[in-house]
Image 1 (tube, helix red, strand yellow):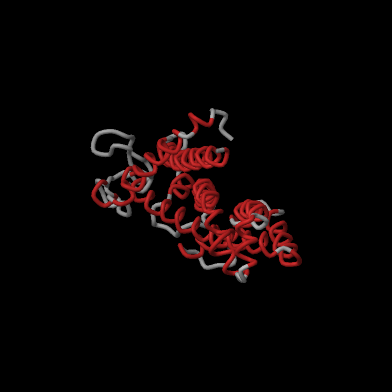
Image 2 (tube, one colour):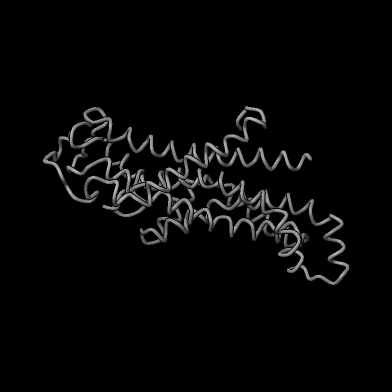
Length: 277
């Protein structure tokens, strides 16, 4: 957790939001910003990458492809995976958390024990095992990331719902004949929404890292689609001869993770400040 005060921490949401806007614009306008086709060799540098400068601002890779172009198009893949996988994560986690916290009893016990089982495995190790069961592709990566990332959301939402279900407005709605489903959707879920938004921002940064880790291990988006994690993996052989091949995608990953963390912690400070009032 960042140690700055709540007042200053709120500005992190603005900084993180601005960084994300830049990332989104890069992803959208990648075809116009990229100087070359990211999939084609544009330089005679096979096995001997060109250094940054001149016509190739960030140099070329071992196959003669422009690094800058691949970074820009890689932002599209990373951002798409981050947003869609996080959305699936929230759907699973919020559904389990709300049902577990509101219904209680054996349903709560069953859902939380399933959550504990998933939590007992390291996320990356479990993702590797699940990825091996599916055919490599973008869809399988989205599903795998969602299946290993929902537990934190579920436990956090459950804790919020446990306190909300005993509130007077929920008791009043129940006394008026509201069904459990109606109570959860109309009365409980809207009050948990700020927490869900914060968890979504923080989960997105973890999704970026998990996607990069899977791509690094060769379990991400299939080649030759540009991927930041795959770029780092491919550059290992040339880390002394051409360190920029590893540094550039590494900086891109750090930038995306920091942006979503800033946004998440900033929103957390805002939500916490409102709850104290």
